[in-house]
Amino acid sequence: MYPYVFLYLVVAFFFVVDRRFIENPFVFWGVFMFVVLFSGLRLDVGVDYKNYTEIFSVLKGGVGEVDAERVEPLTHFFVRIVDLLGFGDQYVFFIFSFITLLGVFQFIRLFSLDRRVSIFVFVCVGIFFFATLNGMRQWLAISFFLMSLNPVLKRNYFTALFFLGCMIASHYTSVLLLFIYPFLFFRFSIFHVLLGFLLAYVMGYSMPYLLAGSVYSIYFNKEFLQQGISMKLLFLYVASMLFFLFYFGYFKKKVCMGREILVLLNMCLASVVVIVVMSAINASPTLMMRLNTYFQIQLIILFSYFFVSLRGRWIYYHIKMAFFILIGTYYFYTLFFNGARYSLTPYALRFS
Image 1 (tube, rainbow, N blue to C red):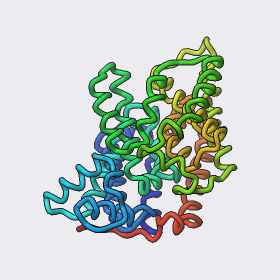
Image 2 (cartoon, rainbow, N blue to C red):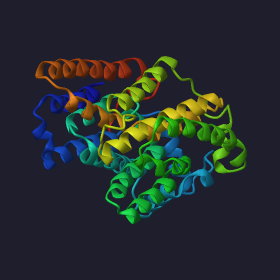
Image 3 (cartoon, helix red, strand yellow):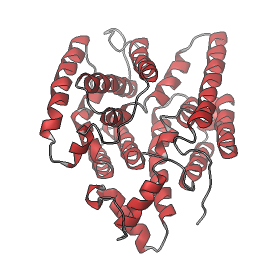
């Protein structure tokens, strides 16, 4: 538990100090490397740790129950390179952690208005940093997805296509993201949103038939990785998405917004569409959450926009302190009550 306390104290310290401190590149990337080491050097932490150890073993020619053909090309590539160099599996975990967190921290550096808030939320809220310790291949895909956004905004489309190619090579579910990706850069009216819900519903209902027999068909199997979903947390999550959409005036024609926040709010919209449509067609909770994972990371940025938008020193201070206490409490609640369930505790390091 002590390593998690130390991790919390580090990000909490940067949350309360002056914003200009974390703007320093040496400090910002120093925090990045600290989080990378915390993630990349972990030993038997995360429910998928042993599963990935088996995957790496099978890809190197070992024996296991993993179907190597279902493992994405980029994982094959990393395992083969590390094996050719004569290094152990821990180096593969480190590579995954480094690239995943590089994408997230680049996203924070380029999009966040207050890096302190974004880093604090990312580390302390379980659906972000703790999740990277488990769904490693999907979070690798999310990292490349995040890396692709800024090149599109800068009209550097070849770079964006490269990152999208790496995304698909990281996790097969990410190819479904391509149906939504082009719409992230446009603003829509209520009418267009409702039409989008209808089209998404038709597409969602058709997917089990269109993808039958492919590597994606396992996600429509009700028995595959079946997991329960807390309806309270799901309601709170959807409510937060809708709050940001209306708070920043997405549907108000007179409200002008930059391309960066437009992309972030469209990700919120995409998240709500995925949840509503997947629930309506009674899809596997696993499929719903895996698709939605690509469209929840923007929350770490939107909270920075929210705090910057607050007017009045008294209001800003008290809301920020309440937020600090709430997120910190949730962090330790996750560790104490769900740490063993998700194999987050006990934490151990491996240096070889």
